[in-house]
Image (cartoon, rainbow, N blue to C red; front, side, top):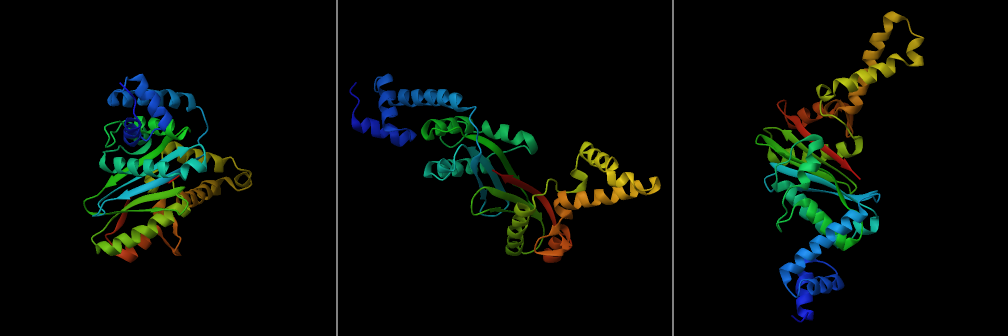
Length: 284
């Protein structure tokens, strides 16, 4: 079968691959369009494997919030250069993957990125395969760094992505307050998260081994060695309080009024029954 320019263009429009790659794929498949698509996918896998060890120090963060603000997603995708991160193709990839995360059902924590990679994008391929196709097209190693999704029935979800798209936050507030008021507070809360970089929501969420390690560091410090034995545990307790106020979102000083903690700021703005329900912070 003759490989016409129209057939090459059709394959390019379907896959986004380079014209020469489309021509070679059609030649390999004897002019069969679907066979050429499969050929390009296999070539993409080989290209991805060759680039897998390359450093991915650049990337972008993207978020999607539902129209009713009851559900939201946040993703972080890494690549090799800022040049690729700024391309329209990479921006489209981010949008597609944020949509996929939004429509999926992600577990929380460290398992989320792996689960996200196995989800199916609208075009019928998995996220992992979609990324591999992008690697073949853009010529750089690209990988999913993180993914999160949260849905609530008794509150609202909001997000903030910094203007450079390298840091973003997703959060949910449980509240019976006016929806617009909660959404406005969520924007400020997510800005706070992006600036203050909490690691945990509550002190109760800090793993026991992390707490013990911190106490041990304080216990072995030169500063503490000079103190009377009966004072040391009280001093350690005080230092742990500072640790929690630095690392736990609800205990952090509110960046818009440092006389308040985040928890108190939310209650003051939205009412006493309002509380932060969830947050996720991503940075590339």
